[in-house]
Image (cartoon, rainbow, N blue to C red; front, top):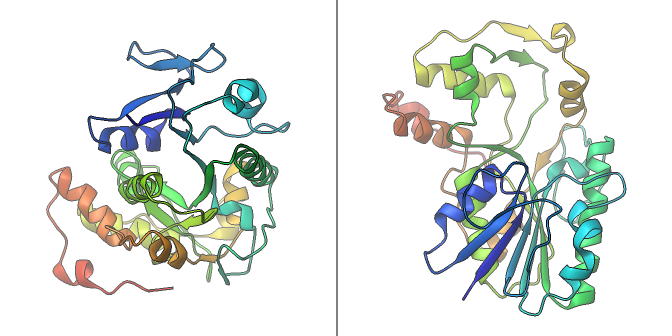
Length: 290
């Protein structure tokens, strides 16, 4: 029997739970109990005896990872644990002026938020080594998917086409994250760190324009970055400019991305929502490999 416990039953963990075979038992922590079985408020006493797989997606605190701080003794005593996965962020690499980074690139986080992530990565890798359990860190790019994409922003009227020449962001569709996690959980791989992103880093303005094309609406006007009046939180995401290499996860786990660029991903979301497909040339435009 495989038993997965998720610290942080959010967007990605919910998609993962829905994709696992019925033979898997899945439980996890939530902020507010919604009546679903096998959900626990973080801080409750939890029985980890039968847990075989552990996934962590809750944000770290200044003092470290909350799960390790609160449940360290219980986690250290888990008798059936075989795999630990920690969902981190490509933000730990910091700014590289648009250059390529891979898993060999030393972390150089630009924000306190990313520094906490890097510290939590090391804590979980150290914990797994002490326990002798396969532990893997997944550095995720910007997550999008059904109900959480630029299409929703466009419909809500909040999408902005901010232009900063040469600045790109990496992304990953939630279904590809789930595929990668499912393979990693069941494969005998000790590779400790994987970048999880698609094949084409892209300018946010291009993504907004393509989303508008899918929905058949006029794109919002371009806004120069210096005139965008972004919040401090939003500005923090624009500090880093890098292209993230995803070749290791494809090679080591022998996976092929279902959505290698934002165009395939957004078109699939739109199609599932009943939106007519865009012109064929947009869907068949080659992706940019790294």
